[in-house]
Each structure stands twice: as structure tokens, then as C-alpha cells.
Amino acid sequence: MYFIEQMQRLNMGFSDYIKALEEERCKIQVFPKELPLSLELVTQAIEACRQQLSGTTTEYNLNGHSECSEQTTSEGPVLEEFIPIKKRASTPYCDEDDEDEQHSHKQKVSKDNKNSDKWKSDWLRSVQLWNPDPPAEEDVTRNVPVMDLKRSGSGGGAFQPFHKEDNASRANESLSLAPSSKVPATSVPMTGTGEENAGSGKREEKEKEGQRKQRRCWSQDLHKRFLHALQQLGGADSATPKQIRELMNVDGLTNDEVKSHLQKYRLHTRRPNTIVHNSANPQTAPFLLVGNIFVQSPEYAAVATSTASREMNTVAAPAGIYAPVATHPPAVSHPPPAVSIKKAEFKKVELFEHSNSEERAIHSEGAVHSNSPASSSSTHTTTTSPGY
DNA sequence: CGATGAATAT
DNA sequence: CATATTCATC
Image 1 (cartoon, rainbow, N blue to C red):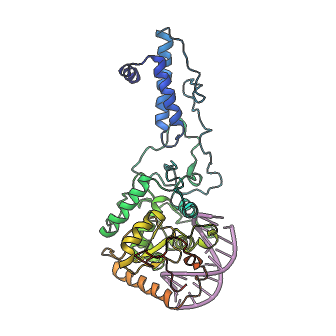
Image 2 (image 1 turned 180 degrees about the vertical axis):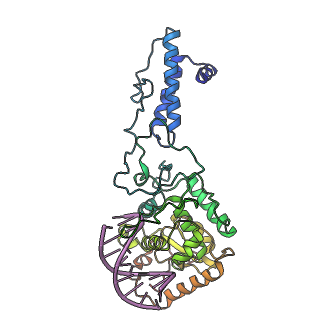
């Protein structure tokens, strides 16, 4: 067997190797969902070694250590306690699901912005990794033979928002995709997670009356597309459901679904601030609107403010939130751009001119500014929120 | 009418 | 909560 070789290569004895394997397994067990096979393999390896050991040599087995090993008997699935068991119990089925999750709590709490992070991840968490994605044709086998029992399924995973990768890929996408206007149809580039692919009509369709529509599941992929569309359309405020849907190019998606999603998006987008505010440090100027796209987050803030901010019509976002993407604004691509942008501008202007009924009354933050005042070359740049 | 956005419903 | 559906407008 392979492990034997490996073991010898490592110059270890069976016991040590087993030990190592068990440690490995402990680690793997933490990510049952993403490393199901690995776990299985390691377990088998351990088993094999044990047999080997008992048969061939004298070494006493000195395992028993690590709490997490144990019960190797053949292929007991083990674990379970590690899994965030969530079952999809109450979760209405979302097409199919499955998906990987990405935890790693990376971006801990980078100093301040604890608050901002909070809500930030709220919305993010809610949608971004909402999850589920149908297994897409491509990915074939996704289910793990042995222990598939638990799968936290879609709704479950409440892990952290992004990751390096996530951020990266997202950024890339937003930057590269937007301008390139993506590909015509059907191509379902998305990594790993696929979402409704054309092909399958499947969704609803028939069923006579009544029947409340099946809940649409906004998987990451779906949401991603949604975001892309928004970008291309120049922001949530200027985008309209229909356009979005068209840009998303997702087969079964309906206008209403998009509309609904958009509504939610806007809600979360528009100052979740207000209340969450509290001790918030006036320091972090949360978001800005560059061109017609929101850029957010402390980290970017710095850059954004220094760069983009001054030249463009950076207007303080109404309390923008979200927009994990930092795209450059008006650079829009070919297809839908022209019009949409204009539209965006208009809308924005509108906002300013009439101090709109809605919003406003919230700015609060702008005030205080206790931090390094003067000097800030860029002066106002961000923060300012004229009208409202 | 269809598209939209806000308000409800589930 | 996150969606779906309804209501009122444009």
C-alpha cells in the first residue's frame, strides 16, 4: 500500500506513522465537509498500519493519546461532533445543495472596525455564503460515499464571509469580468459551485395554481452574478430587476425573484448603520461611493479615499454597505453600460437635489469627526454626505 | 399591461 | 431571517 511506502520514506516506524496519521486525522476532522475523502483515506491508512503493525512487529501500540483518535474499527464515520450539524431541517429545499464552505476565521477583528464588521458580515453572511448550489453537472460526484449523513447543508453554515481566496476571486471577477462583459451564454464559469444551469427546466413550471413558488435559493454563485449585474448596471439604485435578471443570465430566474433579492439587498445596503451605530468609532468612515459603486470597508477605505475619492464624484454613500467588490466605477463595459450609467447618475443627482424623503435623518456620523482633523489633504473627500 | 418599489405574508 | 406575494404607481 501506498502508506507503507510513505511511511518508510518518512523513516518512521509504524507507531510513529500511525501517530502522525492520527494527528492528521484530527486536523482533518475539523473540516469534514471539505475534506471528506481525506478523512476517509487517513482513517483507512491508520487501519492498515495498525494491522500491519500488529501482524509484523513487536512495538507496543502507544496510541491512546490524542483525544480525537480512537475507534478505528474499520470505517466508522467518526466525528459528527465537529460538524456544525445543522441539517437542513427547516430549510426549504434549495434545488440541490452541497457546497463547500470556507471557514477559517481569518480576518479576525482587525482592531477597530469591529462594529462595522459586525453588520458587514451580517449581510454578507446572509447572502454570500448562503450557499447551496446545485451540484452542477460538471462536478459529478460530490457526495462522499461513507459519511454523507451529516452535511450541514445549505442554510446551515454560518461561517465567515470571505477568505483570501474569496476576496481574491471576487476582486478578480469584478475587475476582469465586468469590463469584458463576460461570455455569451450558458458558460458557467463559476468555480466549484454551479447554480442553475440552463439545461434543467425543472424548477416550478407546471403545478397548477396555488403553490407558493419554491423558495429560490440565492447561492453564492447566484449572488455573485447578481452583484456583477449590479455593477454593470451601475449600482443597486440604478439597476432594475429586469436588467439585472438579464445580465445575470440565469436560466430559471424570474424578475420577481430578482426584485425581491434586490429589495433585500437595498435594505441591507442602506444604512444598517443607524442602529448599529452606537459606540462605533467615528473614525472609520464606512463607505464611499465611488462613481456609482460602493467601496467599503476600512481596509479599502484608505486606498479608496486617497485614490479615487478626490477625482471622482465621490459622494458619501448613503450608508452604503456591503459591496464586497471594489470596482472602479464608470468604466463599465459595452453591453448595458451606456444607459445604465446615465440612469445611475440621474438617480443619484436626484437624491441630492431633493433631500429625498426617505433616508437622511441618519447621517449622524458625519458630525463628530474626532480624529485627525485638519491636515487631511483630501479634505472632505469621503464622509461628506451632502443632502441627507 | 408590464415593470417597479414598498409593504406584507409565510 | 430570507424569500414570496400582494398592493399601488408609473
